[in-house]
Length: 349
View 1 (tube, rainbow, N blue to C red):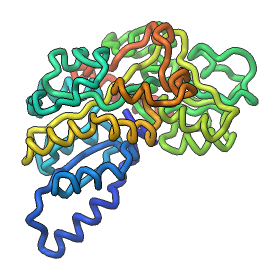
View 2 (view 1 turned 180 degrees about the horizontal axis):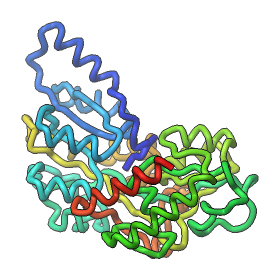
View 3 (view 1 turned 90 degrees about the horizontal axis):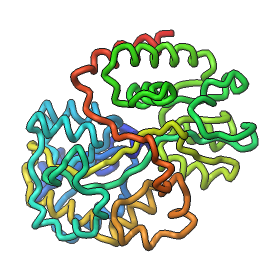
């Protein structure tokens, strides 16, 4: 999930404004491709490149959360041709019949996707999605402000760092942190376990500086907080701006997430959508996106092109052992009211 760079800005890009301008002038006969993606989650130059190569206008919009994206596509009022949701949301959209199957014969660059990112639990037969980026959730901390070894979620409850701790303003991610601290699955459906997680987050609340979104980057880069829960790609960016920052995946395990390209049933141009997905998997384009975004790419040729200081960085490409105990989010629609209630109760404290 470009969770920021918040694989999530929620702002409509300049190209949308251009579309509105065109609409005001009576529109155009040129074909259009509607793409829906996380905020700041693409090198914008590749959009113009695709437009020129395919004589098409790319209308590019951004969303801030998987749930925002889902609601808009479910409503069917916007005719998106390509969207880039995360693992658990892809499961939900498949089950609800919201996605087209993808003709992989039209995606020759799919062969360049590392096999470890195929046949994943949310799309076991590789019918509905093509991997775009992947990453983890962990703790970024300032080495000049934090004493000792940082290797556990426990430190986020250490009173020594009161008012110096930042948590994600994200229901699923923050509850997951508490569940993993308790050695439970981050996909727990057990109401007793979830109630324990709620009590833990309420206990932590007085220690927090804030629940944050995109602003976490400026706060950590500016030495305003000692530690924060962040997505790995944001950690890469922050470390590049402040050498005192380090990123760890806690020993209890964390969330491994995958964002993939899909074709919603709202698509009016499935053939062009498949061309776009293939284009995004090409080596040159995938490299530009990985270089710009700072998240880990599943495109195996691109990884070989990246500098060693990135590919050896656990924030970028963690060693297999570092992922022990980590899980992929599942669709928890059946217990979502419980999660909603817990989050409301935590935030109201």
